[in-house]
Image 1 (tube, one colour):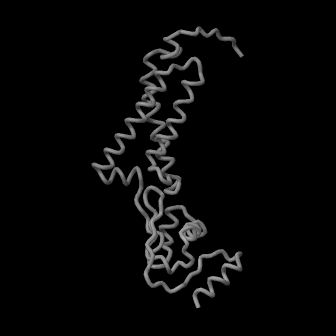
Image 2: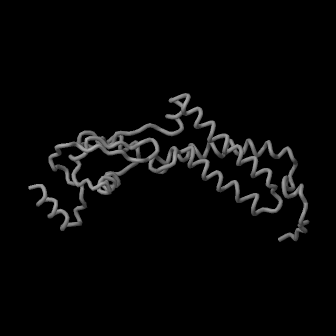
Image 3: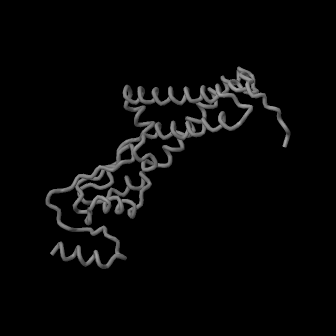
Length: 195
């Protein structure tokens, strides 16, 4: 490894690094490309990837994590490059929010649309496939909400953010048990409850 003499108060190296000042324009272009690729990749991974964050918020979070590492750890990279990229990520987030509010098609493009996964106690198979959620994952989500039978569900929406919203039917016949078959004890208890 090559030995490098580091001068403690070399302000040009600290702020700009050992690159030409014009390199900041390249940082702008690189940030735009990486952010777009990251957003596209997160969009392909499906709604549940986002959880509580929107896809653009998650993309900004991942970008921020990557941006702060380089100027902090690599001596020949200046702080100004990281700061420029952070400002760009901030402007992206603000711009995406603004465009999403102003144009619904832009919000649908970047954040996705809600999906109806269960309608009147029946699974909507093609929506489940589009959302990349297996039946077991769906059943786990329902059991987490204390639902034991699919017939109890009037509607189950997978929101664009990845959060689920469930509307229960008032008078549900206990049909289509979603409890795990391996758990024989709970299966017997549920059968007693429904008689």
